[in-house]
Amino acid sequence: MGSGLKEIFSVVAIGLTFIAFFPYIRSIMLGQTKPHVFSWIIWGSTTFIVFLAQFEEGGGVGAWPIGVSGLITLYVAFLAYRTKSDITISSIDWVFFITALMSLPIWYFTSDPLWAVVILTAIDVIGFGPTIRKAFIHPYDEDLRFFMLFMMRNALVVMALEHYSLTTVLFPAVIASVCLIFILMVVHRRLTLNSSKNRGRS
Image (cartoon, rainbow, N blue to C red):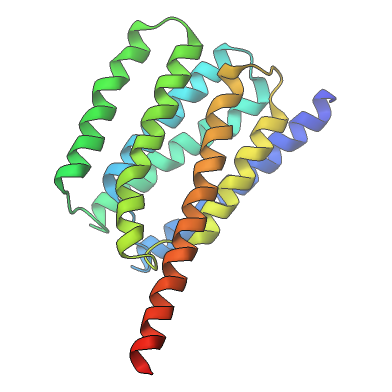
C-alpha cells in the first residue's frame, strides 16, 4: 500500500477522532453523557504512551491518530472531573485504577516497545472495566455513536501504519474489538430493559 494512501488513512482517522470527540464533549457539557472519570484517566495516559511506543517502532503516520486521541482523552478526563459527570468510586473501581497505576512504571523500566504495548493495552482494557460496569447498570448514559466511530478509527489506524508488527497493530486492533463488544453489550442491555418495561405495562 502506497505511502500517500496511508497518509490519507491517517488524516481520515484523525478526522474521525475529532468527529467522535466533539459531540461527546458537547454532550458532557450539556449533562447528557456522564463518563466515568477513572476510565478516561487510564485511557488517556495509556493511549499517549502507546503512541510513543508505536512511533519508536516505526508506525509513522499511522501512530499520529493515537497520539491525538491520547491528548483529547486526557482532556475528556479533566472535563468529566470538572463537571462531576461520574465521580462515584466503588471498590472494584479502585481495583481497576490501582492495577493500572502499578502497571505503568513497567513501561519506564522496559526498553522493548512490544512489552510496553502489551502492558498498556491490558491497562486500557482494564480501564474499560468501570465504564462497562456503569453502562451495564445505566445503558442509556453512553453515546454509542462515539464508540462506533472509535471502532472505525482504530481500523483505519491499522491500515495507515507504515510498519506492521505486533507492537504497532496490537493496541488499535484490541481497542476496536473492545469497542465492538461494548456496543453489543449496551444494545443488548437496552433491548432487555425495554422488553422488561413492556412486560410490566402489559
